[in-house]
Length: 130
Length: 130
DNA sequence: CAGAATCCTACCCGATACTG
DNA sequence: CAGTATCGGGTAGGATTCTG
Image 1 (cartoon, each protein chain N blue to C red):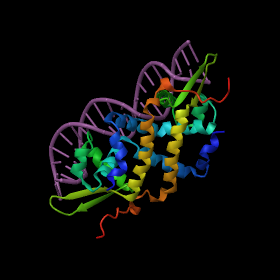
Image 2: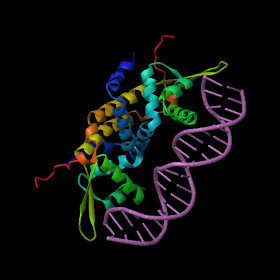
Image 3: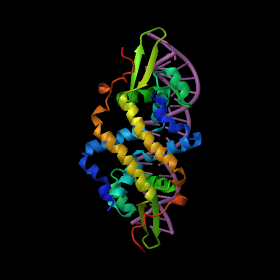
Image 4: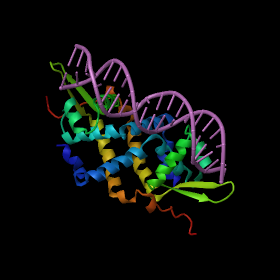
């Protein structure tokens, strides 16, 4: 009855399914989402130190790690300008921007229903007339 | 330029923003997503032991923990039938089902672009003509 | 059957040096 | 400036045992 709503899942191989889940898991985690958001808000490449300032609460190590992961996933571009002292800029790729748009849609959907995310307001799917 | 694409974020209070991010973070994690997916596929309430079978690789402790969290967030309903031995059934709430639909859209979007999520295929946003 | 309790391990992450 | 390297605490999660 409801199962065919997820039919498209059947057209995925297990491998595709697992890889997509990984990507969602990584991208939707705490820091990646904040970083992508900051980069999108900036609307321009940001230096490492600017990111440290704007992503409140992140440590330098985790920022570095997260940026590397985002780069490997093709969501951001890291550009090194060979100067002294060095300058490094991070910016969204089109894919990163598009992904953020998709997540933003989900985000907004949730915000509009924030009051419902509570066990006390949970209602069963009415399947039988009882 | 791109910043106004995220204007709706400005209409969120910081609190709303943080809470929505929490919910995304929790729901998009490894096990919650799999559990919701299994429940949706089943299309009917599932017992604890059935979930253990179908959510491959999860431990009993983590399954319990995750189910509790999903219940607190109003995404699933836990029904205890006072019998010996006990029977407990879990099912999606309408909210849980709807949330999964939203995430499924994102999921599909990603699967359709799986090949792009790779640093080697990353391209800069062409902003200037250079 | 559906968990609760316990133990234990891996790794995540923050803090603090140090470097090209 | 933009990292790397190292140490240490907290915690998520697995394996096992026990119970109403």
